[in-house]
Amino acid sequence: MEFLSISDAMRSAVTIIVMASMPVLLIAMAVGLIVGILQTATSIQEQTLAFIPKILAVILALVLLGPWMFALVRDLAINLFTNMYKYVS
Image 1: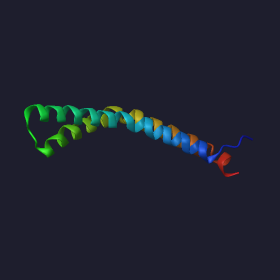
Image 2 (image 1 turned 90 degrees about the vertical axis):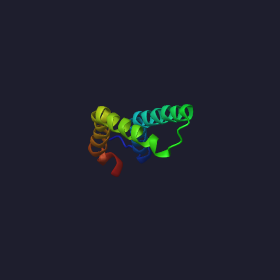
Image 3 (image 1 turned 30 degrees about the vertical axis):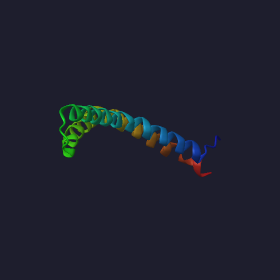
């Protein structure tokens, strides 16, 4: 019987979390940067102006990438639950 360590499970969980969240975070950062550059170029210093494009971009990214993100997390959960006996013994 092969024994797996909890640190291996945690490492794979953190990797999956980073892989699943990184595209949405990068999209939010890019939209924030573009809006910031446009605000600087036009001298519009309204702080709430950056929120609406970011929120819309994140919602669109979640709609488009949501199934892929869910599949990653689902596969991790299935793997953890099917190999639970290897962590307990």
